[in-house]
Amino acid sequence: MTIPDYQTLMLPLLRRAAQGEKRIADVAEDIADELGLSTEEREEMLPSGRQRLLYNRLHWSKFYMSKAGLIASPSRGRFVATQAGQALLDTNPSRVDVASLMAFPAFREFYRNEGQAQEREAAPLPVEPVDRVVGSSTPEEQIDRAHQALQAALRVELLERIIQNTPAFFEQLIVDLLVAMGYGGSRQNAAAQLGRSGDGGVDGVINEDRLGLDRVYVQAKRYAAGNPVGRPDVQAFVGSLVGLGAMKGVFVTTSTFSAQARDFVKHLSQRIVLLDGAGLADLMIEHNVGVRSQRVVEFKRLDEDFFTEE
Image (cartoon, rainbow, N blue to C red; front, side):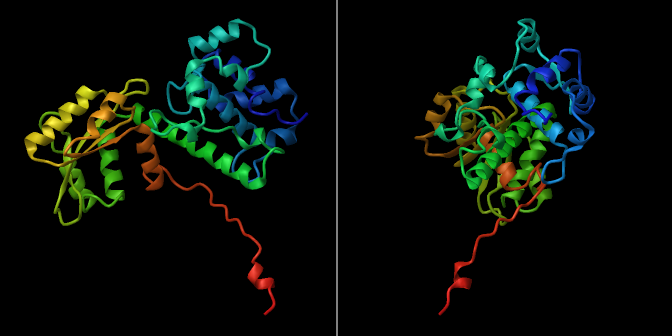
C-alpha cells in the first residue's frame, strides 16, 4: 500500500502518544508495521531528499493534533497524549482528521483563515498541506499554500520555544532582534542598554539609531497563549514613559493584547508600538533571528524576449 496521508496517520499516532512520552522516531516503525508498509515505502523520501515521507506526515499529524489540545510536548522532540486526547480515544473513534479536530474550540480558532484577521490577535494558523489541494489548484497556488503552511507552523514553533526558555533568554532574544533590525548600534551596546532595569514597567532602553540621537524604551512580557496583556499593563508602561520624558516605546509580548489595550494606545501623544507574539515571530523570521534557511528553491519562467525576433 502507499503511505497514508497525514490525516489518516493521526489516529495511529494518537494511540501511541497515549502510551506515554514518545518521539516520532520511536513510533514510525511501529506504525509502518501496523500499516504493512514495504521497505521501499518506509524509506521513501520527500522530493527534496531531506526527510522520509512517513516522518514528515507524522510530524504534520502531531502538529495539528497539538493545536487541538490532544497532544502536548513536555520536552524538545517528545510528545504525549493529553487528557483530551485520551478522552477522544475512549470514544473509540474510527478516524481522527481535520474535520473531527474542528470539534475543539482551540483548533477552530487556530485554523481560521490567516488572511481574514485584520488585527492579528492570535498566532496565524497554517493552511492545509499541499496534498489536500492537489488537483483543485494550479502548481503555483499549491506552492504558495505549502509555503504559508510551513511559515505558520514555524511561527507557532518559535513562540512555543520562547515560552519554554527563561526570561533572560527572552530578553536576549529582544536584543538580537532589535540589532538585526538596525537598532542599538553594536550588539554589545544594545545588550548593555536593555540589560538595565528600568522604573515602573520599563525593562530597558535602546538607541533608535547608531548615533544615539533618539531612544526607544522597551517593555517585554513573556506570557503564554491565551493570557493577553491588558490595558492596565500598557497604561503602566505609558505612565513610566511620561515620567521619563520619553516619546517612543515598544511593548513586546509572546501572547496578545486585549482590544482595550490596543484602543488605549491609538490616541496617545507618545508613539507606542504593541508587538504581539505573531508579530514577534514574523520579525524573527524576516530578520533571521532564531531561524535559518533550510532550502531555497528557484523557479524559472520562459524568457519571451529571447524568442522574439527583431
